[in-house]
Image 1 (cartoon, rainbow, N blue to C red):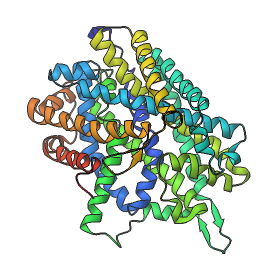
Image 2 (image 1 turned 30 degrees about the horizontal axis):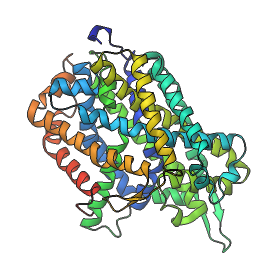
Image 3 (image 1 turned 90 degrees about the vertical axis):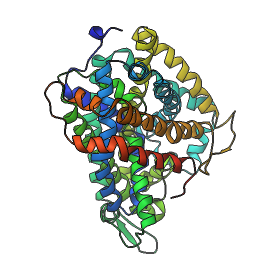
Image 4 (image 1 turned 60 degrees about the horizontal axis):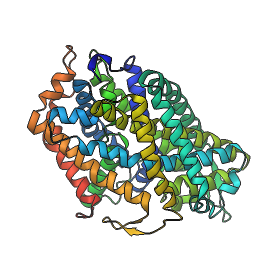
Length: 463
């Protein structure tokens, strides 16, 4: 595709909402609250905020600038900067998309269940396991989710991605705020007379707990916060490169990246306000130990069921919000692949989308059947046990993404030089913010932090 025919976002708002929609995904909702509760509440949030404006800023603006500079999808963009780079950045989203669609199907299932008044039955023990171990249902919902994403991508950048993001992201934010406010009003009394309120849960989230902080525990919180930020910002997947390639040359990408950071952080913290007060009120401290699919599909339905008549309504709003977050993230993953196919193989958007939808659908079938027909258990290097979905998640998130990010830091920090990005950001006379910080981060600090994250993920260091 020639540069003068390349689509562009209509303005900074479209880009910011699309990129924020990509960043605001399931990780914000089911992992951030758990880590915040586990790692001293306010202490985790303080470290997360500091990392967001340093580590996160560096990684996002690098990828956005690469995309705008090259005006190409991730595969061709990296190859144009350095011939030997680009392959991994395209493989990562291709691994992630199938299992993300499988989980997206689970979200649709629960949204439909709550909207049809089945919330109480969904809270019963064994319901979620029974659903994912069935053969047909998970496949049907997975294909519905994948089909929705493909239809959006077929509409293009402005009519598809941007239009949807401008519609869904404000609604998503409103829904998050509604649930968060409701969570703070909750109160529950156990049979022994112990009463817990949503405000008690809010204290756990925001008040820093320094009582048991040691150098080792502080390092553990730092790594947890860094990992959460890294995985929630949609970096190292080619997404920000693809979206950056659609940003006009006169846009202030430094300012836009700042807005993306703010939006992502607000949603992550509001997710904590949504979940921690509600779970703590009805399940106590034990409930705060849940994360991932278990939190979303097992523990939260039980919390909603315990709310009585309000529970089903809140369940509908919650899973609508989760569905919107899942769709905006999934379309960004699909777009990263489609844009690479279009630029590298010089094919149309329709053809690229159809090809990747078929590939993703085929792998997603294996993921869904990995819980029933092709069930097995594998011990991963980090000591956890998983199935097909867990293996794909581990390989993409824990191995390939840190490697891609480290390669990007070396490429920009040492081979091409930080000026490559700085000049791109400032080419229209717009001053890049945090320039000195950026140089230090991209050359030294970010690669070291990423290396620690990678070594921890593969089990070579224990923190």
